[in-house]
Length: 136
Image 1: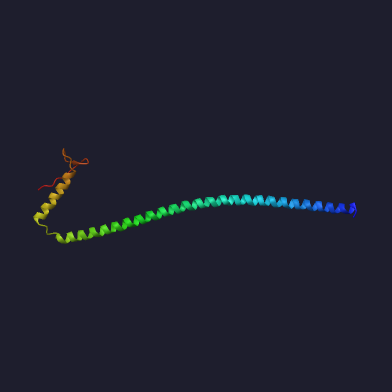
Image 2: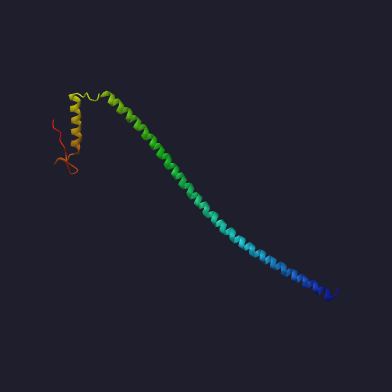
């Protein structure tokens, strides 16, 4: 083999090495860009995970409040039902329109006691308004 025959093969090999070097460099740049994209996506995933955790905590708090409200409402409905039954029982015990003098006197006494509880000792005013007194 002659040196002239070897020289074109070496030149061709050198050109091929330069092409491969350019391809490797191009691939390296693309890989770096993809790594940057993955890093940004990883940050976005982290932010998304934090937001999801915050939403989960808020959802649990809302569910707790709704449950508590429903329990309070059920309790109040039970109390209302009991009061309704008690009022109906009391209405059956006291005939309307046929109150005797004793019941009327008792009602006036109770009303006077309630009014006197709100009247200051030194005057006849409740919150700046005169108190109406009933005649007996």
